[in-house]
Image 1 (cartoon, rainbow, N blue to C red):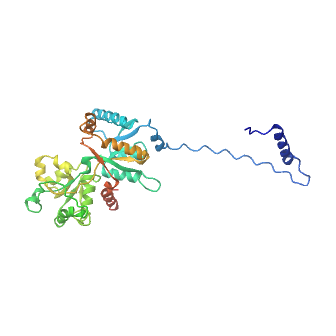
Image 2 (image 1 turned 90 degrees about the vertical axis):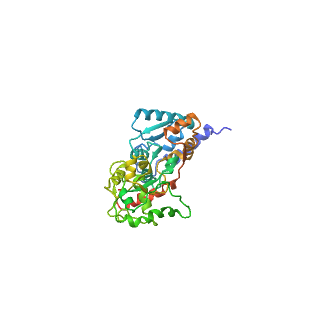
Image 3 (image 1 turned 120 degrees about the vertical axis):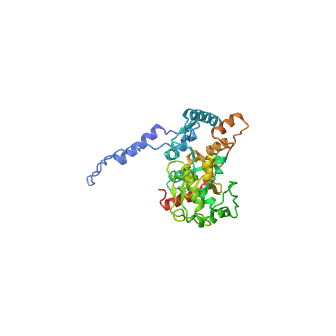
Length: 359
């Protein structure tokens, strides 16, 4: 079908249009005003930030994973190459290991869209939730998976041996986390609540303020309604804090008698020298909680996130190549992590901010 008009019809239409629009106006009419000057051209819009969702939809773009290097930089480089090669093959896309100095740097990389998957501890996981948000304040990141041992972390409350010798406290010889009954979750805290009257006349030390195992989670358990110990008011003086990045100083302080009581990560106590442990025995073991995990930025989308998690969860220690990956992370397997794993940590962080213990 021919959709063009015959030339003669086009000419006639243009002629009629010209008669109506271009003939001279009568003398009694005011000549038309000149057409207004054209508006200035609109300046070009500023360059937009790259769309991370679009970037990651391109399978040629790398998935960027943060990792904190250990002391041995050469070993870290070999481990990074091993992990990136394996995961790249599984995901069918490049994988880039982004080394950072500490957890705070990982959160900053997360917030500035330079990292897609970050290995964080509990405290910095909550910090990431607070920083990586949409315009309504909703978090744009979530815990995805963790090493098996990282969802079974405990802290030890310790006391000076002289207090044990005096009969004030009893040593916990079998240092197992108390079983938590879903129908009565606070029952596991009953032994800690029973110590409240004795704590009131003694000094107490936490680990570093930003420590998950040495401060935030022990604070969470102390402040539970069935325990009711305010760390700033429930001891002889407000609870003190260890300086530096380790809670080993707490163990040394209690062992020397400088502090009556303290709390440390179970691994800190278990790996200490026998002489030091004997001078600062364990008097209470906390319930298990989650410490470290991999947190995913939601710009990765559900498909890439689930594929990445599946790759880690499927690792089999019986397969030599896969065992090598598990060995890099010093674990026997990975397990699912949920947003609810951070509920206790959120409560502890909120408490410290309200009390201005941690800004």
